[in-house]
Image: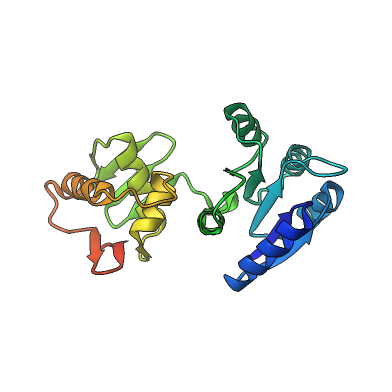
Length: 224
C-alpha cells in the first residue's frame, strides 16, 4: 500500500516510516501541515496517517479541506489529544479512525490495514445478491427466494460484510475489525455464535448452504 504520514516529530516520523516499510508499505512523509495538505490533495494514497498538532496548518484543517475537495482517502488521526471531545471532533471533521499517543505499532498497523480493506465509496452498492439471497441496504431488508428474513442489526452488518466479500475467504480477525470494530481478539466465540445464528436464519426452509467454513482460515460465502 501507498501511505502518507503527516508527522512533525522527525524521530517519530523516521521510526514509523521504517516500521511501515518493513511491513511492506510505501510511505511518503510530510513534516508540516502545509506539505501534508499538498500531498494529501494531490497524490493518490491508500491511507493517510495524520497528526493533529502540526506547524503551519493543523490536522483538522487538513482533514476538513481534503474532505471538502472530495478526497475520500481513509484517514487515521494520530495524536496525543485523547479526550472524548477530541475524538468526536476528529471523527466529525472527516476522520475514519483515531489512535492516541503513545500507542503500540502493532495496533497502528492493524488499524491502517483495516482502513485499507474498506471498499472505496465509488464501489459501494445498495443492493447485494448471492445466489437466491438478496439484501437491500436502503430498505434494510433481506430475502431468500423472495421470502423475507428478519435479522438483528449486528447480523445484518455481518451478512452485508460476507456478501460484499462473496467468493473470498474472510478471517475471524477481518470480521472482528469490520463488523465489531474490535482491533484486538476478545477471546470469545462472538464471531462463531453470530455465524451460527445467521446460518440458521438463512437456511430455514432452504436446503442449500451459503456460508461455508474454510477450516483453519475463516468463512466463504458462495452460491450453489
